Length: 114
Length: 115
Image (cartoon, rainbow over all chains, first blue to last red; front, side, top):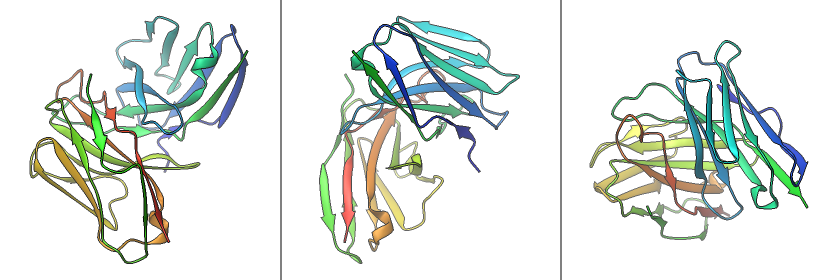
């Protein structure tokens, strides 16, 4: 039972254009969502997050949108740069207790060409 | 910056061997995690620990155990390695708190091959 779904295994975008990475979830208890970025031979790094009380969070070129009714979130990268080429993982968690675990999607490989 | 160090980058073991994967973090984080990453399957949680000597099963704990004797160190143990445990293993840590629990800091990973 895949609770966090990234249905696009890969995405190709030209430099300077917008990249939109999508993520769907099925567990209505999820209330915190994150995006992680992973380069080959490195561990994932935290990129941006959003709480379920918001519908948008922005950090520089990166914006995450959350549509709770559709159980859908997306990551927008504007403008895209070749250095953004990586695998992007969507993740979700329940609650803000003393500890919480993340459920990850399978990832989307983004390729930004010059 | 937080540093999460995994002892080996690449490891080759034989079926049936006992395998230890070590992870150390230097930022006094309470929470530590072990994930495995497989092509087409994403990141799956094996075990986690929210305090010294505490451990909790993740989604795929079968065939694994863990040890957390000190706050900074979290070890993953494959009791009897099997070929289906060939994978990239990722250790992570996070600071306990409502705004920080989920912001994991990952190590660079250990690519384990079981022959």
